[in-house]
Image (cartoon, rainbow, N blue to C red; front, side):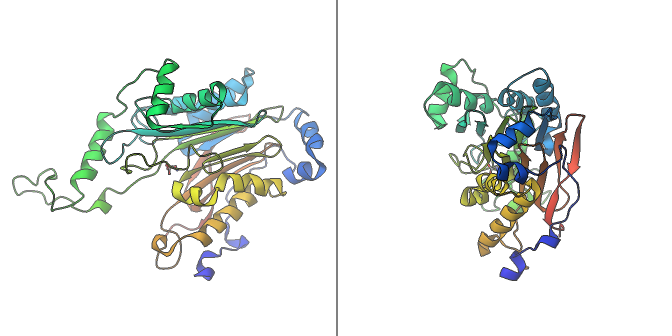
Length: 359
Ligand code: ASP
């Protein structure tokens, strides 16, 4: 098993070169924070990185940075565009619901200059959990508020409740529910009059992951990040993923960089992945190296139930990392994925690094 899961360096395919600002974070870290801020203040181009569904988010965040916004406000304004988009079924309005058909949202944010963080989990009826997370950070002495308390907190700050389940998301959820079993009372379309066999197979409508993570470093080298999601589709009500958990789905250290993740949240919760990525950058590894090291560690820790016959994980996980100097990378367990970045010149999608060629 170890041979399968222990991916060596050569198999971490390099599909893009992402050293935007030049220089390795190690030079800064080894020379200490003063050197880092000296380099950072030497007129760097800001960088915003996001999951692939965040092309509009990185464009908006960069627009905000260029007009002098704080990096946290910039990334939140970016992801709000995706939270508000009913066609993105992984975030905010139109997110896929829990097993009862209710949309429950998770989000966190972290502000490098103050090292403060905020989060909400299992929040219902509020389409912008990223903004509520920021208020938890700014207007309470807490870091995380969940469920009913998070909803009351949001309403206290003037957020309006609304039904976040769009017709499209409800239809997807209904197909999942109807396909769970032949032995329950839910018939699939066409089954009622003997026509159409239907799937009757939950694997036909698989659980899906989807989220937006967005991290930015501005021209002064100040860093912030946000992660917001409807989480695992058809989850058990109350299930909390990695996105609102600081260190799992997001982590920022203003002296080092930021990291965030999308994909199987349980793997990040068990491995504190985002914290680990930032910590690897602190040790002098590039964002790309840091992502690879942590992906390998997660593969090693994967329980046998979640491995394919050849020992590789049967799930996916994606990491996004940016250093204080603006070097960035994104990496996935499996090939074929892209991520969004604005490098100061343009917003674009780039190929992610990966451990395994898709099978
Ligand atoms: N990580 C999220 C969660 O587990 C889902 C995702 O990113 O796709 O809730």
